Image (cartoon, rainbow over all chains, first blue to last red; front, side, top):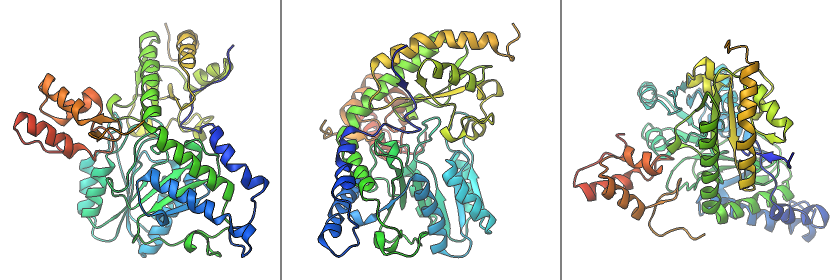
Length: 389
Length: 68
């Protein structure tokens, strides 16, 4: 068996060596508190500012003060939705999609409990957002409007038309947040070209460590803080700054910007080779999503009449890491809410596997999976209770 | 890697010259055809007006950026 083959980069990514190197001094020697008045502590503030500039550069804003550091993408999503709803006041009309990450669906459920009308726009069979339903919901909207649509889906990689959504939501006088946790570092993001009001990112999806994220908040967007009791992040997020991780996120964003086109093109080629190889050699393999409109690194493939968990475990046995859906949902027999929303046939839904390549995926990794997977699928088919012959 | 000066689709890194070549060679008349062939316009959609403009210039017919 060869070394581990990691094809689960939508779940998390390896910390880049350059990122780790940038972080270490802030554990070893520069561990002061940025809020301290002495030079040892306050000297670290400059490094936070530099990291903020690097995150801003990756997102295409010239104003670093529009970046708030958080502990993760989920916190960014919660802050955007709950903080904006609180600042708007009353019970704003909330618009989102049926295929969002649970870190968006959770706050939306809370807002619904608090009395907000929440419309969850459906998607079609390949994961396109139903823009007719969206338009109807916008027509019925007559009060303050808060919308949240993901830039790209974590399970299928399908990309939403965020530019068009921004135009529609703004025409209706609403505020638009986008969960760009999966898109950042995989697609070119520019908040000047695509004028969203808020945008969430997560460090560990782009080769920074787990435990750090950021929320972009366009100047002028009203947002109440969720964490109180400190002046940090311009009083928008209390708590002593996690300096090493913030520095790590800054470095990761700098690397992502430098490497974006090269990484994206290589990953797309690897993903396409993996996908076409699997479709050619594995019986009952079907891609969920549309090839032209997906993240360059992601393919979600259903193996008809099989249980994805079984395939995942057999791949795990030979050192290949994949996912049956969102990582936090693996281990549950419950089918993915994303594939359910797409009305993927029952015979395909349980057998879906997400392969997500990344910066460190090699051609040998792809070769190994293409060599091993057909026999695993064949064995699974023999064992499947859903196949009688 | 430097970003090409005539980059149109920032999601999938497709340039104006590549789209022009496709539209001319394959006689494409819609954004959908371009997206299917090279992914351009299939991401965030911010380049769809630009692709519509390229098609219009070549075909002489107006193209709605968000019609297909």
